[in-house]
Image (cartoon, rainbow, N blue to C red; front, side, top):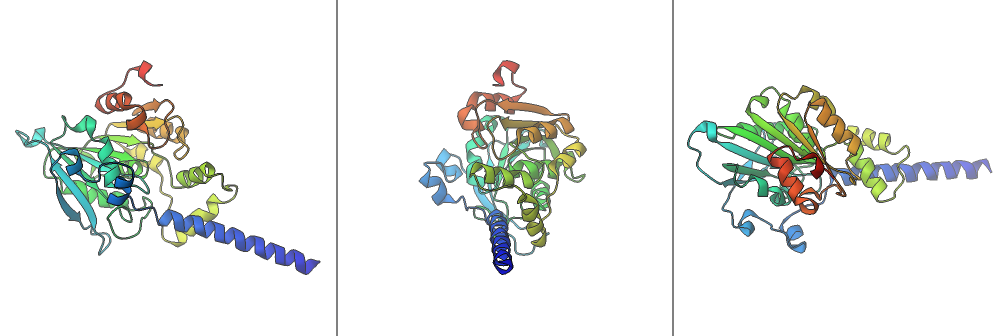
Length: 296
């Protein structure tokens, strides 16, 4: 009998370890949202599909040798002076890519002189492995440094929102940033991992600390967006859907409050639906503080 109990305990522990490791591997290997992904969904796969001319170049961050991050650059207008230049940089979420960011450009077409779209490591057409935000802010800092003149607006979704906030909190980046628009941010990587498990009705209890420990073994820390928001000295607008199952609503509110920024709730909107389900509110929030009656 004791042997049977021991065997059962070993089998249970092994199954739990496989489950945890599987979750960690999945987090480190996000889906590749490439042109095929966009075409399968009837979405634009490049700026040309929207009638916009662009150039493509590669950002090679100094922090990781061999890393190549593709960038689309769209020049919309020639500013009359460096002070009039405004560059909007779009940073996508986990499992998405610069292609996904194309859907959010509408409100910026008449206010930006330049747009940049980047694939984070391990996403889209970029090589390397995702770091789940732990270090991506340094890559973004190098991208900001390549912007020649003028002000910079950072527009990030989910993972990209956390990267934008932490990059803008860096002393060498902050002076260049005019504003951050953070769509569905979260505090640490614990939150989206838990949220995705809950959404798929998979076991969660006691799992997240083990997954985080596995990610630490892979060299990835659960860095805090909330801590970075407390250090921000630039305007922050947080957009959050009230039906978001990936990024907790309470964390979006806390991040906005920590930076003394704006917090806009999107009624009946999930994690990545802000610009599609509530386009008018999305435009209002991006261009200026929306009316209270617009918030749900």
